[in-house]
Image (cartoon, rainbow over all chains, first blue to last red; front, top):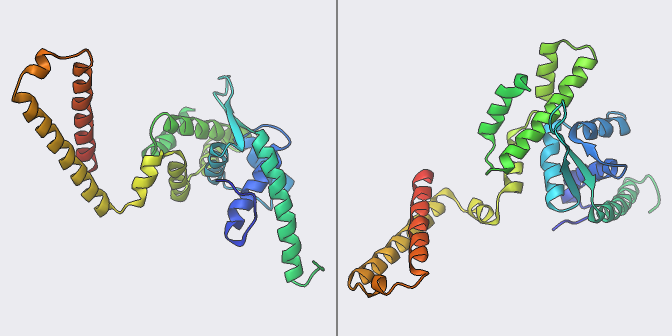
Length: 115
Length: 146
């Protein structure tokens, strides 16, 4: 069961998912492109060791939030690209809302802003 | 992709996945390694170093491999993974005994008279064959695990 809610216990997983889904909202990506775009969008703050991306991508694919497609074999061999599904798009929006709420409450708890 | 054959073989040995999931994962990793390698070459990095960096970029930790195995394994495997090795051995022995016991009992019943085989319907032989194959597979699995 996939849950878009951000909780203390699901922070790492939820953060990784949100970052990947945000990149895929702009269009399908190969694994390599995905890693590059994540680093570029965050000014290299979020740099995934590429090996750690596979379990996250495969879990998202199994949950039906993204769909992997194999490109036809070209001179550089077969490549798998990932695209957001309709279910994934809805999930991404819900998760983004949940992250906003989480961050507002977190900053309030730090005494930075009013809730 | 020959330059990655050795490291892919090593990942293959560590990857506890059934086919075809195993081949697909390896193919995906190989493709990404190739992309990283070419990107390093385009940045002017020498060939040997580009290979090393591409392998490091796509390195799969033991945790990542375990996660992949959990994601791709079937429901039966997920249940079995929750059992301790000792509990698993006990259940395997019990199941094997029950299966063998049932086979012996059915075999004894069949050997007491020849009516079943003499008046065999069209499904008797296929069903008997499936039972024998299932017993052989179960026995082989138990031996492979022990």
